[in-house]
Amino acid sequence: MALPNTSVITIERFIIAQERQFPEATGELSNLLYDIALGAKIIAAAVRRAGILEILGSAGAVNVQGEEQQKLDVFANEALKNSMGHTGRVAVMASEEDEELIAISEGTPPGKYAVLFDPLDGSSNIDNNNPVGTIFSVYRRLSMEGNGTLKDVLQPGRNQVAAGYVMYGSSVMLVYSTGQGVHGFTLDPTIGEFVLSHPSLRIPPVGKYYSVNESYFGRWSRAMQRAVRGFHGDFPDRIPAKNSRYIGALVADFHRNLVSGGIFLYPAEQNRPEGKLRLCYEASPLAFIVEQAGGAATDGARRILDLTPTWLHQRTPLVIGSKSDVEFVAAVLAEGDGLPVGNRRSSDRAG
Ligand code: FDP
Image (cartoon, rainbow, N blue to C red; front, side, top):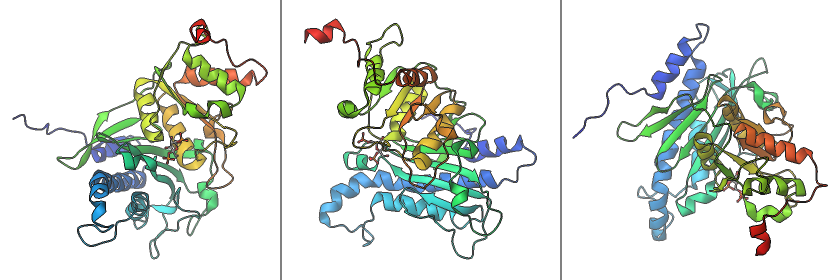
């Protein structure tokens, strides 16, 4: 039997090595990232049990310890709050699951970071055993003392000092950036550690895939319809045709496109004029990651990282992924709604 490699680079070792490049660093951010990794492991363990709990659920919504089963997104939210709230590294938190700001635990001295998170993104996938994720975003606080305030969390995405996501898929991966490239770690369940598996990720400039919920096609602007027709191969002189992939879980769709090259879109549509995704919890952190990997993210026109949120749960249209693909969408949208949707290929017309 082959023995495991004893020189693996764990996330802790990697974070510490990165920190050493900055002699002025206090280690607080490193520890905060490690707190988040711990929260992710706790969530990962619960996600793995979710399928079986669902099956055993017919015996009643009570687990083996006789405790009432908690919904997984509520559990994930609590796990992250608990992994960060008592450490003295955080001044304030905000979660997609909470209407208001989350104050740090009483008796804990406030730290210098503000953390925002979407604890379980794509949670509707849980029932089908499909991947889900956690997304997080870290800012240095702006307020000077006491507990953090709204001003600390409503910062433009370009101010992030770190961002990342965890994907609970066939394996569990944590991908993060502190502004020095994007690095991916895979949870080795045998040792319970995230180990470096994808150092210095770069997204290809032109992607293989496009990911969008096309059932909304008829509710998009004509310009957006034209852009997506470009991905079908309707404008080969402007953009090569792509393959379609849509899981419907942002982290999983984003991760595939980051690694293999591609573009994810969640445009505005008639029923959701501001799109669906949240600027603070989804768009901004993933925009930080994608830019660090050489890609781009816009709301169709404006760079996501330049948008300053005015409230915690603000939504935004999102176009994110390989740089030239994102630029193609921006160029087509800039042409406006006046042009016809597209030149349908003769093969389409015949049908
Ligand atoms: P979900 O509603 O399952 O939580 O942010 C929410 C999100 O999933 C994203 O993960 C996903 O990309 C998107 O919504 C899917 O929305 P549609 O079902 O409208 O395509």
